[in-house]
Length: 227
Length: 249
Length: 49
Image (cartoon, rainbow over all chains, first blue to last red; front, side):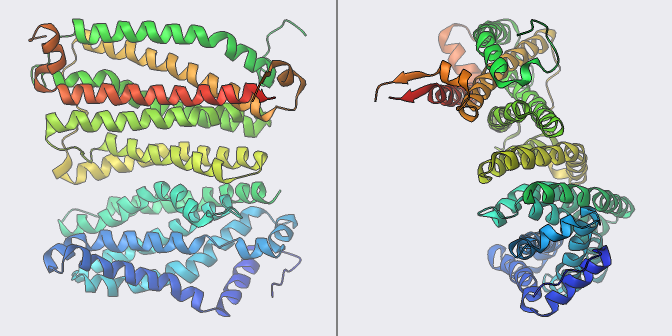
């Protein structure tokens, strides 16, 4: 049962979403399960040779994390939209920006953070060394919030549309490519001995930019979808 | 009706349709003339390239198509933004009309890029910065068209696709920069397939003439499609009823 | 051009397949784009009696 307070704030929505999710823990495990399965498929596809797996490992983990995020984000607003509480939230004096930011944060807490925690284990499956694993985890830590923010934008744009989940992936994946490039690229750079400073600076810049701009776009998209 | 031309004169679908109908024949004439001129210069006047032989002549359509794909995306986003900001549906319709032609030029740029790459660099596809960015641009166009097709409500479709187009346009510099970065890091694929041969003036001229030819084409087709959209959407209006011909079944 | 005549023109110094493959597909794509737009216009202008 949903419960909407009179004063809707960032913290309130974040807390509410986390509380709701805690009652359906399966939903948290599903994207994680997909993540593990997706990474595990690659050795079957390309062969188990450790040298080659090591080379593609960072890219494989990153792409799988990206897909897991996009698959899990499509229903971010669906439940609230279905029972009318989304419209209530948009009517409140608090800005839609806060709602969008809170929703994206909740998604990251429930999906992104577990992915980040799980990534080192999967990297080990692909025979990555410890330095590479560290860089991979760090880039995912910076990158998964960006993905959650962009995913939130996609979810708002495709709210209520048939085949919305697949459409969302088509719309948002191109926008995620820079994050993917810098994230996975940092690991290759570290392995060839090049400095990863630039990669992390760029990822940080992308996170800042997305953090500021994406909730604005999401808020606009929510209003378009609901009116 | 006042004979004065204002900025908003053609925001009215009826007047836009009249303008489009009047100008389209001229645009087609210009397109054909420029195409003939461009191809004549390209094949009849421009010399054979020292390194690439006759294969380089693909650039006379590859580069103009690539330029058009980018210009049309910006135009599409621009009109979509205007339609959203000023709540003028004709601007949104114009944006919708641009999308398929833009996507077509992007496809042409990719196809001709591949056919240029095979004889000159040995592979059908090279992940160089510009071709890869073109591929992503195609995804952006397809996304716009897909979103528009998925939304039944006309107003929501106009606004949502406008937002998507704006997000796309803002992201294009970021995407292009990151793709170039990615390309230079992975030295294996650093041969740029679009490194043009040292351009003789005639080659450049042919390319420019073809660009204008494509531009005239784009105007003509986009105007046609925008007219069709306007007539469809405004079909209950008097001026549309007056234009319609009754066709016996 | 180095080769003369129609056969030289079609051959394009051995690259005929690529050059004409490019121009051919481009022409088809542009004609198709135009054709669909024109058909949409016709459909919007005509009313079945």
